Amino acid sequence: MNLEKEQIIVETLLQKAPYAEGKVRRERRIEFCIPPDRIRDFLVLLKENNFESMMQITAVDWLKDGEIELVYQMWSYTHAIHAFVKTRIPRDVDKARVPSVRDIYPAAETYERDVHEFYKVTFEGNDKLEMPWILEDEDREAGVSHRKDFDMLGYVKKKYRLLDRFEEDKENYVI
Amino acid sequence: MVDWRLYEPLINFARKRSMWIVSFCTGCGGIEMPPLMTSRYDLERFGMMPNPAPRMADLFLITGYVTPKTLKRIIITYEMQPDPKYVLAHGSCPLNGGIYWDAYNAIKHLDKYIPVDVAIAGCMPRPEAVMDGIKKMMELIETGKADGWKRYKENYEYYKKNQDELFGEGWRERTARRWIPWLMNKRKEIGGGEQ
Image 1 (tube, rainbow over the protein chains, first blue to last red):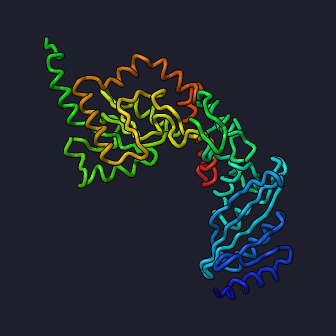
Image 2: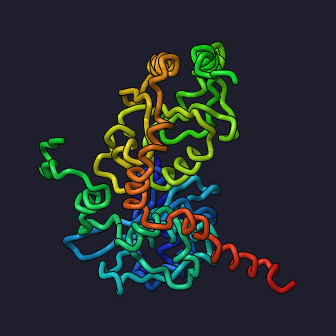
Image 3: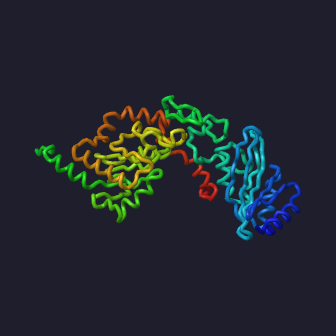
């Protein structure tokens, strides 16, 4: 496997951004870890270096570490390389804040709304966060989220008035 | 004065052979509709066809899981249909939630909210199974047993209570008004508000 192209891109980017850590994962995949306050600088740098498209913003809830990991997935049409830009922010609702990148990549607006709705991360500078998205108003008021400490099954039973006959044993579902 | 009850067998026969379907597909069963409608299974030989207007439709196919958001639209569409109207539920999701039994956004029992005449089991039912259900529906119409529309009228309090429990009182108006503030903001953004 020839990873020269990927190596060169990672090295150029790391030279310009000394705060970042980066490595080549495999062919056509590169990976960076960024402190959350430098995310805008780094994405501007990526855009200057021919990463034209933002594909997705994903969130991973690390319950034991008390952190939420945001993964910005960027795609370069020029190099045909997929870059993961990872950043970790605290998990508490009032501290989970990160600057918005909507003005750099306009597509980020949608993904930021998505992450805000399901992981309660606030993107400072995006004024459309409170716009209705996937959840219904009553779900939103009840605090439905995909964070791991939300009791989803309990909420479902309450909302749909299900009979309480589910065993909550993950190995052995009894319906 | 003509006693129309005399003609009921004839009317039922005509109804059975000319069911028009609301073009409203939910969930994964929508993809089973194209083979049903096109040359392989060809539903039009039974006098059925999809119809964009619920005001002219008889049969409502619930093709798969129903989210609360869709259920609001389903109830409104169902009430727009003229009598007699029939509901055919596909798959296990409208029956008891199916594989979405623990999902916050799929309703578990469709027959708590609107009456269901025929339910087909399976996940997802093949077009043959859907045709079997349609055959059953035709039998029920001919014998006058497909009376979901009568049950909806008679037990409207029960259905209304369940709908209100799920969505909250006054959900029709709230849903209709939900996007208005955001649309007004949009109008300001593009400069429509100043004129």
